[in-house]
Length: 211
Image (cartoon, rainbow, N blue to C red; front, side, top):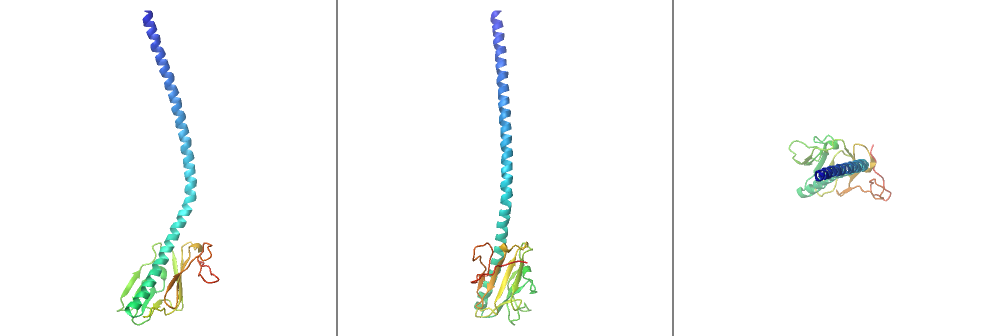
């Protein structure tokens, strides 16, 4: 009997020790879980702050890339027009929008201009047609004597002119311009003084602005 009692006491002690151990493990686990939750909350707060700072920067990059692609698309067409005029030995014109109405934001048409009037007439075949900018809100204007661009058979331009591109918000830092010289060559605006705004690149730079 003493043996049985001793054994019973040992079993009870063992269970008691296990319960104490489980309680300690449970308390430790709860402590760890609580600490992880705090860590998670801190991480979320930091992530939110970083995201808040990053979103404007990302938006800026997207806008800059968009206007750069848009002005480069126009310049590529102008260069193609000059090249085609020389290759064909004929006048090539570029007019605004798909009906030569002069609204450049809606696109443009490059064509061999047999009667030199700057308008796509019956019998004149387009060389290239652009349907405008994908954003649908950026504006492109052209300042010159005529509303169209024309390259003569030697590649020279009928007139000098300036294209200016403005993004929908009107921020000057996104403005871009393309300048057509008398020889027909096209030059892109640049930030010559490093202040973040493009200018005409003259000795005394004139910064671009958007209405």
